Picture 1 (cartoon, rainbow, N blue to C red):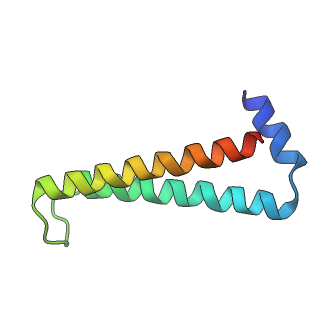
Picture 2 (cartoon, rainbow, N blue to C red):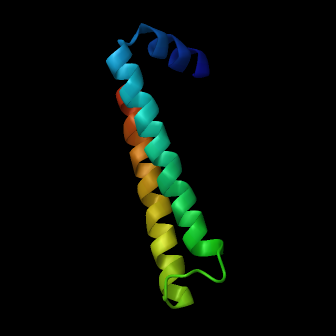
Picture 3 (tube, one colour):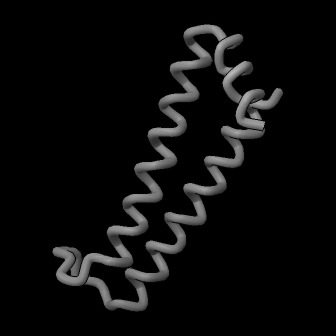
Length: 76
């Protein structure tokens, strides 16, 4: 599976590779932001704990949706 990913990555045009890298970067940004909302105790944003956890989980779920969209588009 990983070999196919590398092979597909090498066959892509520079524009497609750039968009793939940007997509993975955005995935990581949403994932890390979700973790920050969940784990940072003294966050400067004034939110109740349950809302921070809910928003953090929402960001993490959205990041995985983006990841699977990127992964599926890479296989084509």
